[in-house]
Length: 111
Length: 107
Image (cartoon, rainbow over all chains, first blue to last red; front, side, top):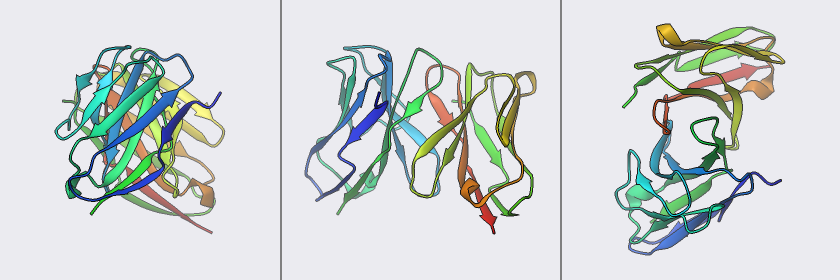
């Protein structure tokens, strides 16, 4: 039981490049989330999903897209990366509106 | 959205000391969690505690939902307790995080 995993762990992009972050969970959780954490701050919600095939916007959705084609996977896409998207990205999952479990994070730098 | 305030922002402890961290929130919540972010950036679940009191070893937490606050107690602190402690609350699926309390435990 690996819990929540994220790939890649680190990535450096140039402005304008695109990439996809993958989150996978093996706990059969319905709900999944993407957060970003900037230096000295708590996490902020980007997008979330309450089930396969559904997505919704969080607090800071601009510049990101998501997809939940399979229950166990939640993808976060950056179509045209900007330096303001330099951050640490965390994925989480939960059973309904209960305790959330977090992945190890992806450190993204956009130059 | 729900506002979450944590205090103090920074805390320096001598090994073996006890401390209390506070989390105030602005509205009723369905979920409240405490996390420890270690120096490597990993988020570790400490407590899921929308109300009541829980204990886990040297750590304990109390949430008084009617008064909209939660407390995290660290007893007999150790250097491995260093890191940032976050409180996060959820009124509608989505967790809102406080800014955290940075704890430094000195040997």
